[in-house]
Image (cartoon, rainbow, N blue to C red):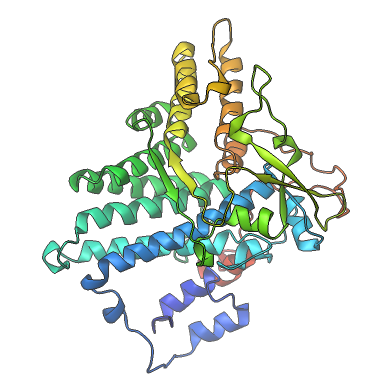
Amino acid sequence: MRLLPSRARAAIACATAVAAAAASACTDITTLKQENPGQLSASTLYAPQNAQLIVNGAIADFDCAFTRYVVGSGLLSDELSNAIGSVDNYNYDARRLLTNADYGTGTCGNNQRPPIYTTLSVARASADTALARLREWTDAQMPAGVNRTRLIGQAATYAGYSLVLLGEGMCTAAINLGPELQPAQLFEQAKIRFDSAVVAATAANDQPTLNLALLGRARTLLNLKNPAAAATDAARIPAGFVANMVGEGTNNRRQNFVFISINQSNWSTVDASFRGLTTESGAADPRVAVTNTGRAGTAQGSQVWTADKYGSLTAPMPIARYAEAQLILAEARVAAGDLAGAAAAINAARAGRAALGTYSATGQTAAQVQAQIVEERRRELFLEGHRLGDMRRLNIPFTPAAGTAYPGGGGVYGSQTCFPLPDVERINNPTIAGGA
């Protein structure tokens, strides 16, 4: 589909690298009048009869961004390691990304190096656009059977999640050619979306969306260092709740990208720090079950280990679920000095897995219980897009440390702990470039 004939839309496309164009090409697009008699107009595309389709498209954009974020954040943190002999892949794994690299400009394809900034920015823009249009329309304009309030809740929820991931993964980011925003500012923007989502989903009696929005807001509030408010939302999540990105076998945008990256393409491998983990009793921990394929990657010395939880292109990837809510509660309980309550929440997150046993905080200090929560999150939320955000939020050291020799690819590990604002935004966003 062609871009709409608007200078503002073209500028946004350049800033978010949707067209993956060079800076000079973006200048041409934003300064020359564009004519295309075959293009779709906004009035044709953004019409009330397409409301459901527009929201479905925004959700699909998020699904694409989310599954790639899981892999990319896993590589930059400590969940995954590189297995392919490529300089750009080495830089990704070694935390020394160049600001013109694919993490900033890549889109939803079969990427060796997971795209982060453009995909999340497109997902956020798609959801925000849907939200704006839905607020302009009336209930009477909706097609039969379409609940506008319900769609508002869905669009706001996915806009919120896109912003949460931008805040957890990016060092800084921008919205709609606006100023360079720090993570806390991105989380505040996410909260605005989640607040709207909770109101709309409640009004529409849409419980699945309400649960997803509440848990997204709890996650956001934890990032904003408000554990008490986070606990209030997390406590409302019912046992058994899960919202998945459900993979599709034929649509590359919605295939399980962990499976593509490890099982299918040998680009990545489960990091050694997540192999062979056991419970307190010495049994294999089912939350981090992995398999040694016996295959060697093309990166020197690499061995491909797969994550058992994602065994196919269509394997669902949890966006949010009950165990996460309980671990947010546990963290809030520690902050409030309620160690027994924290232990109860940990055990609620562990429920249904006999091998894990029961955790007790008896005789433990608050620091020890908090350390247990960190480890529980590391295992429970393995390859679900949380680890990088946790490492930044909780000041968990990145290992190996910066300056340590990088095996296979040469050089040393860098000091990056987040994805830097890419050149495509810094150069083409007049608000940022003009202030440089």
